[in-house]
Image (cartoon, rainbow, N blue to C red; front, side):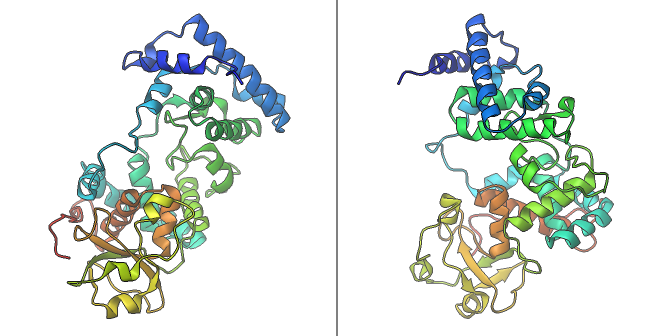
Length: 365
């Protein structure tokens, strides 16, 4: 069946545009194709139950944004050279990520404690997600969200995903949860200090300040409550820490702890995890915590070595896997949990920042 719109030709033209493609004029042909798609989207969205007045409100002034397609097409693919965890961590912890996090953790201690009580997720982990996602609310993105989502759905590379997210954005505006003019975020559709997608906002957003709204741009109580709720629903176990860096005993047979079944979600990252085994078994096998302590004997943990055997190892719990629910990447989840440890150390303050965790590949195993 022939394509309804000349999307491939349009995508090629857009990607070939200059780097600052957001300033590149959209040709009449491109604009006509986008307008046709938008009319089709409106009809199909109405059939899915979205109200016409919602669509009118949310899609007002929606435009095709060439830079969004360019950014999406230029994402690293599977053939990209893998980044080593020490390099990834250094990029995440550069600048003032730790000392500013310590200051923010202290300044928001009461609000973070409230979110911890409500969700069972440690305050420091909530703060670390906030820090990794938006540098503690300092980097939020300035794209018009409906335009970005409509552009990505129109482009078609991940049409189903972004059509669902555009539906959710329409619902947010239509139901009066967020003002249309406030809908700003990243080119990929994430927004606010939590960097939720619209569907996550609808599913996990929480009103932490009791004003009847969920404001992930400007309300710290809402931000912290929503992050905590998201992680709780993703499987964080109350009272169960994420894990720790570990030394692997000489001659340890990794094949003996290989997972018996392949994962069914977050497949590539979880494929790097061993089977879940009680902490007592890892301790008995000779594993040694580094800057951490053993949980209760029956807490199950898995071994991960993000850069391969002998290049840095961690024993992680089911709570760690909840962070993978936020972003399906071991590098991301380890960065969050190590940042949480760094900013929550006793006495952390602006005058006494804690150095970034050491994860050098040459560290003993």
